[in-house]
Image (cartoon, rainbow, N blue to C red; front, side):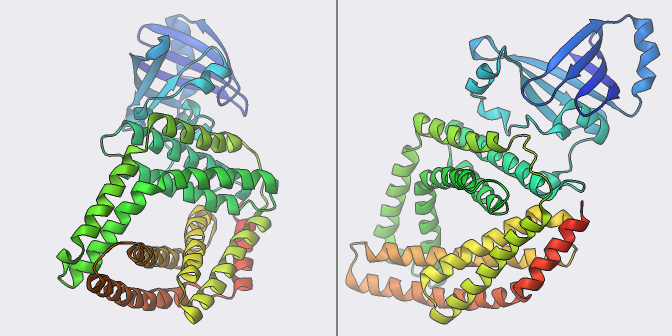
Length: 426
């Protein structure tokens, strides 16, 4: 069914909408946002429609609606937009109660949950157009820092839930498992920005839920990373047949873990992550720019100290700790980026490069630990350990070089500049 609708009046809580859906002409008043809304609708004649329609100029959408039957007698309404919104599609299901909505398990093709994000509502699309892709997981220009971080947590958790659903439906779950784990790590980094802003016990509980969910998804991914890292170590020296038995064992382990992603396990993960999403849905946390700046500065300072410890002792646990700090810095600067001056882009780029290089180093350390527990010929074990150690030394040198550039600012100066930017950006 072709639909065109325009908005005659809008405020924070209500809207008055004029719609042509096929041959039907309707005037609708809606009140509320998110999951629960009140709606009153009346028919209008063609003359009334023609008289009112010009008043919606600049606040309109055009779309084609497809009704799709779901299980349990439910109907999905898939809207495919045209005009300035060409390429945008949104699906919606209406329920008799909020409890029915909470019990509903969307099909994997629904994608990421958008409920509660006003810019994705029809009136938001009519006024502002499609939300810029680059700001989906970043502070929006006029957004208060702490509230914006909460919105990003909502969006990232929704992305993780969607990836878990897709993993359960896909023949190859690996890319979706990887996407879910990345999204959960980004949620945890964002939660650290709210330290001292939301209750510590609540933040700790959300962080624990995300950590447990990520760990539940780690088995198959870890085995696959070991295989890839081992292949890189062997390939450089032309000794790919040195660890055939080891590689075969890793493949068997990865297959076992893939089989562990049962429908029941995935449902439990989905519910846990969904709880985090709902915990921040529509939550107004305020500005708290100084506190957010202090939290990102705290992570920066801890990353700088971790770098010094790693450089001095070169121990795997020190590099692993540094890696976590570098990833936090990368994700947190990504979230705050639109409110920061352009020279912070260089720090974020450095943190991105550093996190990836420290990740490669971590993979080598995990591989070395795995080797120690394998039943291999002593000569082969010694040769493999030497190859891994050589690769590790090269990687450490590269990490330290990037780290010195990334953490060149003094922590106090870094924190003050972030605080000034967040105060000016709202």
